[in-house]
Every structure is written in C-alpha cells, then in structure tokens.
Image 1: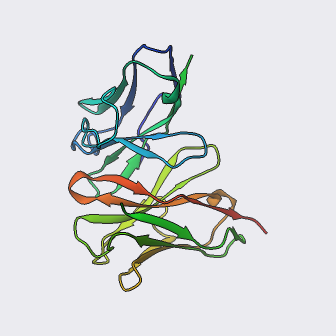
Image 2 (image 1 turned 135 degrees about the vertical axis):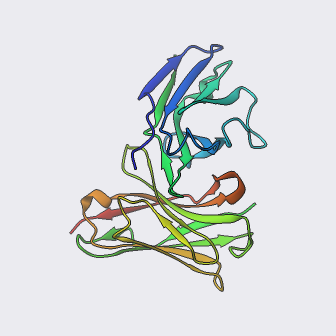
Length: 110
Length: 120
C-alpha cells in the first residue's frame, strides 16, 4: 500500500487560515469516511485532532476542521496561532482492512 | 483515561528479533470496541502503521512488513506485544503502541513511544 500524499510543508501568519491536503485513492479515502488527522510537536506523541473526516474529539479547538472530496481529504486550521506549529499527519482505513498514513506536513507559523 | 506503556530492549543486533510489549492500564484490553496497534516513526520521518490486533486475536499487518511481523495479545496481563524478525538498521525507529476505536477507525490513545536502535 502506498502512503497518502501530503505537502511536505505549509506556512501561514498568525491569524490566517491554512489548509493541508491529503490525497489517497479509491482504496482508502475515496471509499471510507475514516480519515483522521494527528498533530505532533517535536519530541512529542501524536495527538488526534480529527476523526471520521470532520469530527473533533473533545478538547480540540474548533479552529481545526476537516473535509473530504473524492480521494482527497483536507485539514483546515483557522486563526493560526504559534502553538499550531507542528507536524500534521493524515491517516485512512483501507479496503484491505489496513491503515495507511500520509507522509506528514510541517506547518510553520511565520 | 487509558494509559499505554511500551517496554523492551532499546538495542537490537542486526538479523535478530525485536520484541516489545505494551502494557495497558486504566482500561481492559478485553473490552470490545477497540483494537490495539503498533506504529513506528523512523528518526526525523513520518508515521508508519505496523499492524493491529483485536482482543480476540485477529490481526492485520502492513503488507510491507507482514512477512516479519507478529502481534499477539495476553488478556490475562492486559498486554499486547510486537515481534519483528530479521531486523536491519532500517528498522531503527521510535515504536508506539496505541489504541484504536473500532467504530471510528481512528487511534485515540498513544503510548509515549520507545526508541529501538538496530546496531551491532
């Protein structure tokens, strides 16, 4: 199985909005609404930010939102803050009952 | 709040077998609705899913690692384990154990991770 495709890096200024894309295939994102997004600060454990494409776990800021169209999922962070600077990973369930991650996107808050 | 803790050798010689155990506390590994995963992260790289197991023992593995991986569960000890055979330097990584929610197909809890280095 191939990793989901994410941009290596994105950046934005405080207060702005950014979107990170995650492209898969009809074997994963295109078939299931089981897309998750994780935030990982350097040296820290990944944290679940979005599940089932657009649902936020309790405690996650509403500034984080998710969507999907076809084989591509997206994570949008609005009102960027310095603490949002981190690596972000998408993942999806697949038609072969496995899980696949994206390569990760480094978000820089300018 | 469930807590997961990895344990095992931090150094493994090439061609040998890597073995890690994850101890689950504040929650039963036998409770339905969850699956128990291993995920790794090579130094400075992204996350790689290794596989997961249900408390019943059913397992699912990353096809690229399937020939070398085995995940097992010991419900009496509330633990699950990973073995990875014939390791090389390319298996050097931080290994995380984690809990997944079946109905949501997402990973909601992670262990702290343990660095395993493959070197002679």
